Amino acid sequence: MGLDMMLLDGNEYDAAGARRSLEPSRVILILTNSGSISTSLIDAVEREFPWTRVEQVDAVDTACAAFAHPVGLILVDISLMRKAEAASAELLRIHPHALTAVIEPYDKVLVTSLDDVVASSLVRSVLPMDLRLDVWLSIVRLLLCGGEYLPPGLILRGKIRSQNSSHTHNGVMRRPAANMAELTTRESQILGMVSHGLQNKLIAAECGLSEHTVKIHLHHIIRKLGVHNRTEAAARFRSLHDSGAAMNEN
Image (cartoon, rainbow, N blue to C red):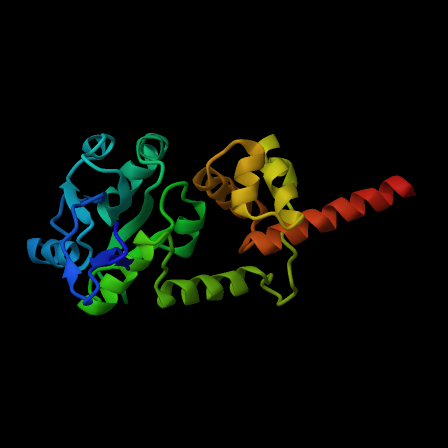
């Protein structure tokens, strides 16, 4: 690219600020058998993100294949989520750099729960289809940039459920079990590094893994420990480690 060109938000501009067309270099893979995304919406996506090409398939087996360009984002219809989860290892192997979001028809009536997302080895975001086009495209842009999105209503529901489950029926707080014994050797290793402040990139380099694989391990760790995020998981690890050290001293 010459000095008279610049790249901004995936679009190429000349010195005068005019956008120039780009050849597609990434695929947005849509897995749906219900026509969740219309042709006009696909056209809008490809106009907004000209470096992408949208591929739509109706079966998980078809999604487990190489495409003309690397897959950067996978959108899975809610009706195919379980089948996609069953094939998650293969999807992640073939499309190692792709982030995955589940497609929900409505923002106010969500089938997916926060627990579903936390427990999933594949899906990290939820994309409602009844949002304003500009908002919807902004979320797709976030996902293409490696971000994650959860509808506010889903997060609120999760918080309410968490608060309710943290009490017994007589109103006394119930402390969740640590479940540290459920962690695999690799998960314990990664959690130890997180507790020492290492970021995913450094953990991946140290363990010889991809950052995406590290993220998957962290999601499993968070689910097994019954915590909400990596910070709480690290605090739990340090607390148990300190308790164990104190007992050994005694």
